[in-house]
Length: 466
Image (cartoon, rainbow, N blue to C red):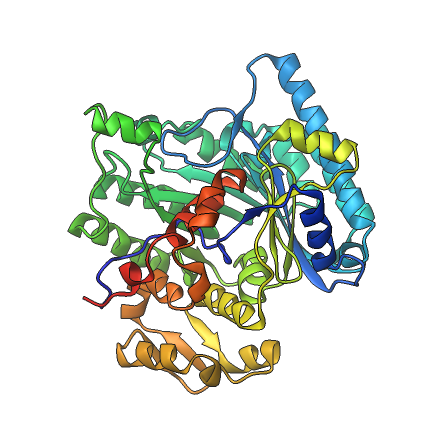
């Protein structure tokens, strides 16, 4: 088995991102994205790059909204106007205007910070300027504190058909320790408001192994989720990122340290997730994601399984266009100015993927679903899966991390425990020990930093066998 266990909060491939602010690089980027060619299916990520407070362990990009109501309103109005203008500009291209939009994720930051009149502008623009699929999944991610009966009613009656709430926990002491912006009862109230308004597809993000979060607390969290009738659940192992406020509090002895990820306590919490999901009629359809049949995330399916293009709009968003990743700077004022001046908004980009790298990316993302369908792979790439990755696949079979079921390679129960290490088997050799990307990571999307840091390490560290 692998010597070092890899835990990645997000999977982004390719991980490398480089500054493209130079005019010549911008020209080269524009050419490679091929925006004048008709697109097909795609998804969209809309970034609302603000939060009310910063959670103590959050390592990601976030701007805090000013407390002054007038300043806050002016800031949000300016940003939403820029977002709408940017959407119209993208819709005017053949790649996006003539393609089918399969899923939209309004995140951040905190997507639910948008007021009703903001959402009306954004949703109206999407409906008017883009070709939304009949079953287009539009998710509003957010915080329970932002919902009122009026906003819940608007959301339920709008084209938004899915809401994802960052609940984290239902234990007041735990929420206080991690610095959550909401209270446990607010999450319950927001869910009830949305359900009463007619919206059933609600997903909860829950965390475990937080400071002072016990096995008994975790059991109580599941009791609340069961009572609420939640259809979709994501469960994340709590991570204390170096340099965050939480790490400093733990080092100062003011907050209890978290348990080791390999401890019996954490393994027990993970076993409880599987047991709850079974009792609730949920399937573990992808890594850390559980859903009742029919409530799986379509946005994830098109992004990860189908590997379609992704258009990221807004400060701090990222895209994947024509086999190339791009990112927009975290600088909100800079983003607004660029949109208003009709300047390029993409400030960072990866290399253009080779055909092999594109197939590697497909493998990495499809592994999130615990299986690689042979016919699906052949349809997408025109190649035989076993011929493209013979040594890697044979090694995984020999180690009993995967099994060949004839029509698919399926991750075994043992393999699920090491899934993220398995994904790293398909990283291209050029992605490892990449110090150049590491030096530029602060200019990229913040959620990409951990991937660049991982890529800067040695391959042997993660793939060496014990």
